[in-house]
Image (cartoon, rainbow, N blue to C red; front, side, top):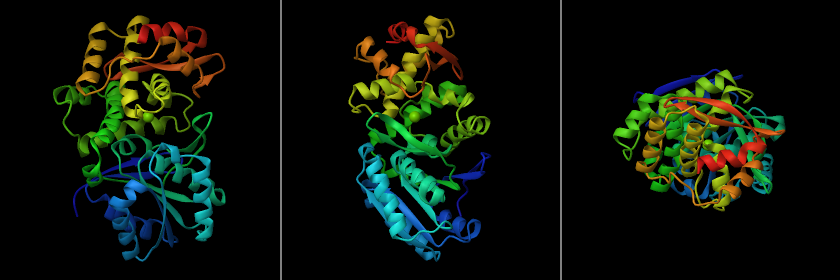
Length: 354
Ligand code: MG
């Protein structure tokens, strides 16, 4: 078997993240030996991934003596809602999954968030496994135990913390990833570089358009592990993972979600950097390096939206707590800190950031 990177996450329930080509084939054996009471495996996937990868996953599970059943939903963030969630729960009940059975999320962030939330709540919680197929899900959303769905009032407003039993990142899935989706994931990779990895930042500067591989993906997951282990439920240091995100959520919303999450995050990092220069936490040279990398990687460093519209959208963010919001500001490349910002100052911050 091929060598792979194994990253142990010591959350409230510990689990391994396996990264490499061939991780898919490791999943059935893991279920058989680590979770020997499992019989049924509910594979939850979207219509795009279903056409590409689900038959391989289902046949490997069946070959290991497990009983896979498959739930497919229409691809896209629009499916991540309470209606799809309810039909997934009905599917689990209709297939008589019991509390020793398992859900396997096969796909990007939408599949992972929704399948994880179904697993967190069905029969008051059953186990689940993440098998991310997008770069964004591999480096970010599949690790850390956040699950949930969107409602009309906003993204991820209904959800639960529920840690997976294992995460299988098979790099071969990335071969079929459309370029736009790769760009989506690279926005989060850039986030990790600015957050705490000067080496990764330098690697991106030297080859901004080159595909990343096992070691870079594992490095991002390792950073997420360090942060999640220190603060599983986001009361402190985990907020750092929101670098660029409060600006990004406003940009996504104002674009009618036409700008993807990772693209918006890259732009949000440039915005946070400019705001940090005005706050005196970041040097002009480091800000210029960040803005330049955002551009050379193919993202917009500036937004076209009006500052007042961005500020309004930020005031509706779910990260608002009372009369302030925590923004993450770079203090250097590879070093960031949370900055509690009164809502009354958001307009000025945005004016500095655009
Ligand atoms: Mg994100």
